[in-house]
View 1 (cartoon, rainbow, N blue to C red):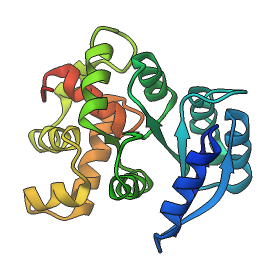
View 2 (cartoon, rainbow, N blue to C red; view 1 turned 180 degrees about the horizontal axis):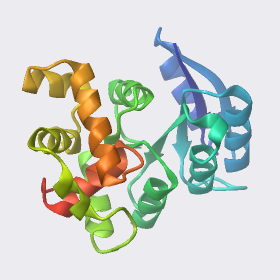
View 3 (cartoon, rainbow, N blue to C red; view 1 turned 60 degrees about the horizontal axis):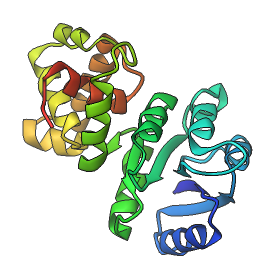
Length: 217
């Protein structure tokens, strides 16, 4: 069971998300927050698997709340999935730096939301094509905001191949199918790539892949 906290300052949105996710047998909404501080407090209290986070909230916005959760040593298992309208690039960049594991547009359909929660819960990164284009176009112009993309040069050919698939948004299972290997083998390659690149998570690895030219938008 994936335990989820919903963080959005609009009650109607939270209610809609709760109703939608309530129909999923493998997902349980364990709490709701209307402010950034409430989201952090609930995460610390409930230790959910995923926090579905709005970026614009009072009393500590979603970026602050994401950073607080991602940096808490007691919440290393908790992932943050950001729901956004993609109308503010600075918020997206800040959320990525803060430790968000994925971004999904508020116009996404129910199946996409459920899949996104499952992906980030499984340790993956979810960057939609829209989010990826916006993130890359801005991060590339900000040297020093992430680890040096040149570090990807130390990857083995297979690791580079795996990272390219990761940057395209494929899950470990999907990459395993492409390469005809086990998902565990893919997971190992990803872990090695993260370590060599000095990336915190798959989301950063995706950005580095675009920065380095390994893949292109």
